[in-house]
View 1 (cartoon, rainbow, N blue to C red):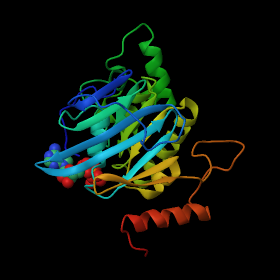
View 2 (cartoon, rainbow, N blue to C red):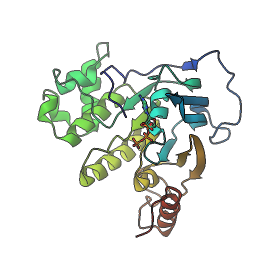
View 3 (cartoon, rainbow, N blue to C red):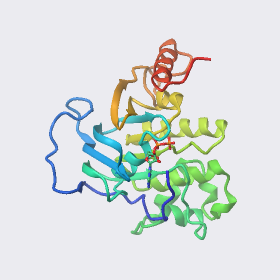
View 4 (tube, helix red, strand yellow):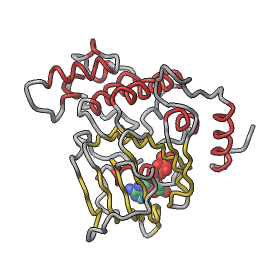
Length: 276
Ligand SMILES: Nc1ncnc2c1ncn2[C@@H]1O[C@H](COP(=O)(O)OP(=O)(O)OP(=O)(O)O)[C@@H](O)[C@H]1O
């Protein structure tokens, strides 16, 4: 994704409905999503072209409260473009998006302000007497309670991304928009971050849209996978592998499950990745 000037992207919007451009279309049925569940995010007929070349050719989707949806697709399929539109960061798309509640965004790059300490980065844009306590709580939740006064430059890549997660979390989002949030991290750190996200999701119950091109990550974390291809949601897969979060009463899903392997192969085939 192209780098954009830094901006407070984590504040999100409360009950934001926007016609991305043009007049509002009514949000009607026909969107992808679990029937009957209240949607925290809805997109309808979202289209985007660059220099006359269509990248998104009519996206309809809905994410239910508490649901984690992974958006998979090949390189250049438009995943980041769609996420930016859903985050309200693209003025040139058409269609309608609606967020019910508060949304927060985490990008592949941590986007911390280098001249602010970790705690001040997390507190950015917050007001009220309890900001310090909220920041401390969020940093504790990502395992960085002792780094509040550190500078971003003093952090490892994984720590900086944890701060980015804390900055989103502190806003108590109903929806997290995650654009390859662990894509720049080494494999071990990535696994730890996936585990952190699973735990936070289980504890806080936020919904999330996770852009990734890591099939295994999508299968580990998501309730549903949407495959973006040719500018549309070409396929929807419900991930029925047990809970993605930590649950005492049921086995957590894992790549060891035969059904996990079968789904992984099916998705890799769909993405054109040959078996080795
Ligand atoms: N600002 C822009 N100007 C022109 N073309 C753009 C712009 N942003 C994205 N594109 C093009 O739109 C297409 C989709 O890009 P996007 O970054 O959304 O894909 P992606 O699926 O996120 O890819 P990747 O997995 O490689 O990050 C690409 O062909 C890209 O070159």
